[in-house]
Amino acid sequence: MRLLNISKSVLAAAIAIVPSAAEQSCDRYAALKRLPDRFEEVASGVLAGGLELFVLTDGTCTCDNTPVVDRMRGKPPPQNVNWSYRKATPDERRND
Image (cartoon, rainbow, N blue to C red):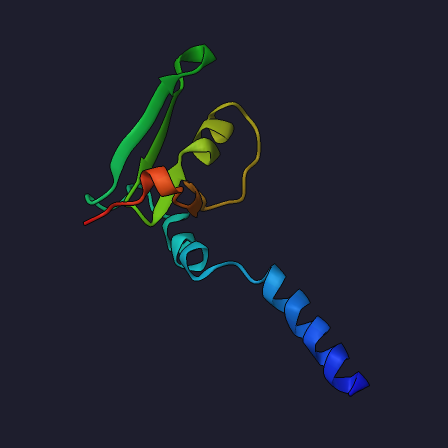
């Protein structure tokens, strides 16, 4: 019985650190220079220095161009990363 309890806690810890399926599928957008046409802009703004920040979503994934902005400001984001991504919030999800 003790072994079963340890296994349950190990499994629970492993599940907690594994990103959701949506987040795992969103990572495929990080290296793209341009997001697919199905993405819609949900926010944008002009930052100091005239740099533009964009936030786009397809209802499952939401991406923003902060790696590009960081690069233009001289901060070193990971190479070949143009978009930060996350699972879309309930407000960003489509009800199609």
